[in-house]
Length: 422
Image 1 (cartoon, rainbow, N blue to C red):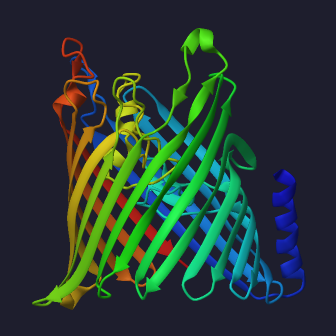
Image 2 (cartoon, rainbow, N blue to C red; image 1 turned 45 degrees about the vertical axis):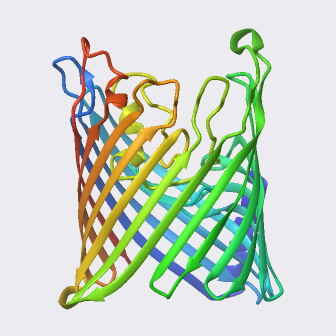
């Protein structure tokens, strides 16, 4: 893949040499988290502070009417501290770098590519924020999309997940989505993805199939209903059976429902949103639903659920990685308000509820979270936001910690973000 990316760099240089018109965007992202009250050893404290500052360059250009290139590059400084350690890191990344071909209703991309959308059951590779600041994931591979007449569109992707700059991981994704548009604002889209991994350290091969579909309906230009169903096939094959025993077959499923609406009343612009996620879980003789690299936002604290990994106790709910849909059931209701006389100010409020889908546990209540935020855009290119979040642990969460040795209580978080575009 290194050769392919270097080839794309040569295309960038060719575009520049031939005087093609560039479209460049530069922005700075600064993010700070202050988190208190993480589960800790009896009588001790477990707090977390993280600050990250990133500079991004997004650049794209067309060498001809059909051939071009696009890329996103970043450099950042990150610092975090806990009651156990402090770490400072400098990161330089090629987040995206791809050759682009467009002709009529056909488009192709090859190189390091982004793919998918957040808050769906489908794979997502792109930019997002978490505790570590501005993070990205990508595929080293190719993407193709084509319009098939008036009512159909198809897109397909193949690539290897990237682990670090110019480094391929051991996970490969291939898949396609066919969209049928029977009417304006209505889309019905079946999908299928094949996800493979060969983990030589844990000695197993994963052949995971994700298939299903989604229905998306823009009701009146102000409201949108999204319903998605996904199911699994495939299995994990262990070649270290003396350690793990038998192979595992996948057969779980998941349902995601979202509804958003916006309107204006008495001088106030408002947006209301609702999300429901239900995944089949672990039970005797059953394996839970397994997602393929999604990013589903479920609250400022819980989404980076490494909050739980960061609790100083190995294994406690560590399977809930950032944005995961695995083994979980969740609800979200929220609202955003902006006064008509000050549209540059937005007040946000969200309530979340979580439970594990692991039916082998007596108590499955993970807890709930409340987020309250304020976002301000004082100038066109400057965005400022602050969030106060509070996580209330449920009994299922508390059961993971022996009360003789650990204190478990509410977790609070203050976060601040600034984004400046040039």
